[in-house]
Length: 291
View (cartoon, helix red, strand yellow):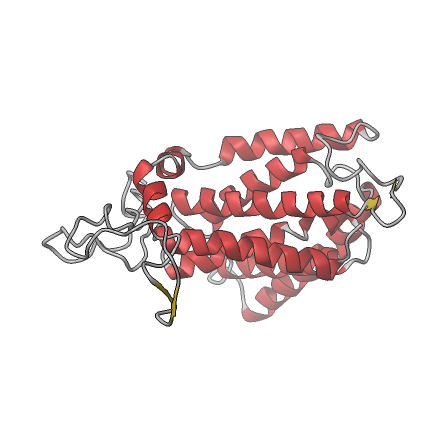
């Protein structure tokens, strides 16, 4: 299988490519773009969480410990004394980082349930749930993060399968087929638990309409197509033949190759030049019931 450096390197490259498209489409604000890109990088190493004492596993449980400990600290801030808050915060951090870590690895097997398409779906939907309910991101941003997570996760599984093929010796290793699979048939109890967790995540997930409508938008894809290559010179210096002429600056924003922002999603910096008023402010999910 590929090592940690290869996985996180490939995940960073793939997530960076997706982030470039997202930035060009101008569908999320920069702070949200960073958050969804990190979901893709995380997904590229997440399948190795079941590898005992691996860097992804230690980092994941350390991150979960920090997240839950501070969540409890902030929620209980007005209910207990400082000494009690210290105990709650440190106790939660240690329990998740070491206790949950030990229990998880006692029940899991490397290249088991976590190396499957079922786990990819669970991780993606769970990402949308966390971004929407815990981080307070708009539903469109939450599902965009889920999409990044899915791509990063699949990148990991595909790399593991590629590394199972020894091209130099023209042979296939015994590990081939253990990474990219629908689910783990060897341990059906773990598979059923993952299916149950996936169903629960789908039930708690935010609506998908904004994200689906945005991705299916013809204006978005035509805008990306028009921005794919420079007009005449690369970086304003090197003249190269161009294959698609952009519309003049005084044309409409869709004709100029600028994709409109997804409705209900916090937008980036490109505003509709046809609008006479100020640029639209970012949508706050808490104050806009439509989101």
